Amino acid sequence: MTQSSVEPKTVAEDAGNGSRVPAGKSWLDRYFHISSRGSTIPRELRGGITTFMAMAYILLLNPLLLGGEDGLGNKLSQPALITATALAAAVTTLAMGIIGKVPLALAAGLSVSGVLSTQVAPDMTWPQAMGMCVIYGVVIMLLVATGVREVIMNAIPLPLKHGITMGIGLFIAMIGFVNAGFVGPGKGSPVTLGVGGNLTGWPVALFAFTLILIFMLQSRKVPGAILLGIVVGTVISVVATTTGLIDEKAWGGKAPALHGSVVSMPDFSLFGDIEFGGWEKLGATTVGMIVFTLVLAGFFDAMATIIAVGQEAKLADDRGRMPGLNKALFIDGAGGAVGGVAGASGQTVFIESASGVGEGARTGLSATVTGLFFAACLFFTPLTQLVPNQVASAALVVIGAMMLQNARHVDWTDWSIAAPVFLTVVLMPFTYTITAGVGCGVIAYCAIKLAQGKWRDPSIFMWILSGVFIFYFATGSGH
Image (cartoon, rainbow, N blue to C red; front, side, top):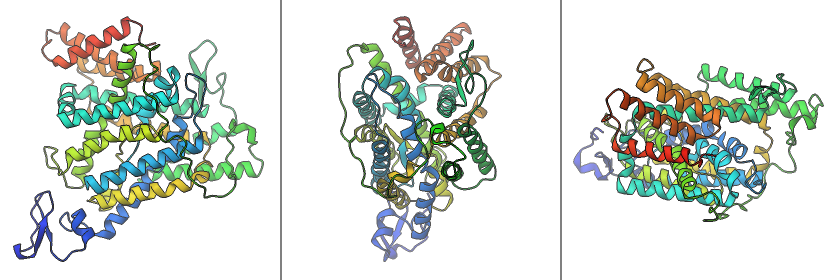
C-alpha cells in the first residue's frame, strides 16, 4: 500500500495497513479506513449492493442442494433452509466487514453443501451432518491459528488444487443436471438424457432456456447475470403455470406459486439443531475421511479467493500479503461452524465479492452492507420459494462451468500432472463423491512420481495422505 499524501498534522490515526487516516473524517470513515484506502462511502454502499445482487442466488441453490433425505428418510423444511442460509450469510459477512474490515462476503459453499447432501447426510441424520460441519469449521480455525493451514496449502501441488476445484465444479453441475431432470438413470447405461433417452416436459425446457440465458448474459458481461437469469426463468414459470400452459403437477411437487404474503417471519427451527456422536456404525476411518472431505471442500478456494479479491481491491501486494489476512482466514474458517449451527452448511468467501470491488469497494463497509441485505432476506422467504428447482438447477450448472476455468492453469502435456488431475476431475461426478476423486488423484500423483524416480517431489504430507487414502479404499470405507 502507498502512504497517504496528507501532511502529518492532519493525521488522526493509523489505518492498520501502513496508510493514515485524515483527521476530521466521520467515525464511519475512520473505523473502516475508507479515505485511506482511496474509497468513498457511496462507492462502498454501491459495492455492497452489487456484491449482494451477484451472490443472492445462494438463497435458492443452497436449499436445493440440502433438500434431500438423510439416513432416516427425513427432509429439512425449505422455509427453514432459506432462513438458515440467509442467517448464516448475514452473520459471517457482517463479521468479515466489521471485524475483518475487508470487502469480502460469505455464504454457504456449494461444494460443502454438495458433500453434506450426497456423502454425509445419507449415512446419518441431518443434525449429525450439521454437527460434522461444526467440527470441520473448528478444525479450519485451529489450522489457521497454528499456521498449519498455510503449510498444507503449500504441500499439495498447485495443479491438484486446480483439479479439486474443477472436479467439484463438475460434481455440482452433475447435481444440477440430475435435479432438473435433464440427466437421469438409463436403461442399459448408468445415465442418459432425460427420462429413457428423451427430454420431456416444459420444466426441463425452461431449465435449458434459463441455462442458455445465463450463459448469454455472462458472455455480454451483464452484472448479476446468474440472478437475472433466475428471475427471468421464475417469471416465465409463474406466468406459464398461472395461465395453464404448464400443469402444476409437471413441476414435481413444487409449482412456482406464491402462498400468502410476500413477507413472513423467519423460520429458525434449524438453528442449534446439531448432534455430536452417533457415528459408530460408520467407523472411525469413514468419520475421519468425512471431516477431511469437508475441510477439503471448504479449504482451498478460500485463501486464493481472499487474495485474488484483495489484489483486485489493491489491498494485497505481489506476494499475496494484505492487511487482516489472518483475520479473514479465521472468519472464513469460523463460517463452517456458524453454518453448521444455523443449519445452512459451511460458509466461505465468495468470488462474487470481486463484483463489488469492481464498483469501487475497498473496505469492510461494503461487506457490512451485503450482510445487512442478507439479514433483510430473512423476512422474504415466500418470495424465494417461487423459484422452481429446474430454474435454480440451471444456476448450479453455470457455477460448475465457472469452476472449470481453472483448467487453463494445468500443464496437460506433462503426464505426471495431467493424469492425476484428470482422475481427480472425472471421478468426482462419476462416483458422486468428492473424496474418491481427491483420493485417486493423490495416489496417482505419488505413484507416477515414484515411477519417474522423482519420489522426493511429493511432500511428506502427500505420501502420508496417499497412504491414508489407500487404507480408506482398501478397507471399504469409501462405500
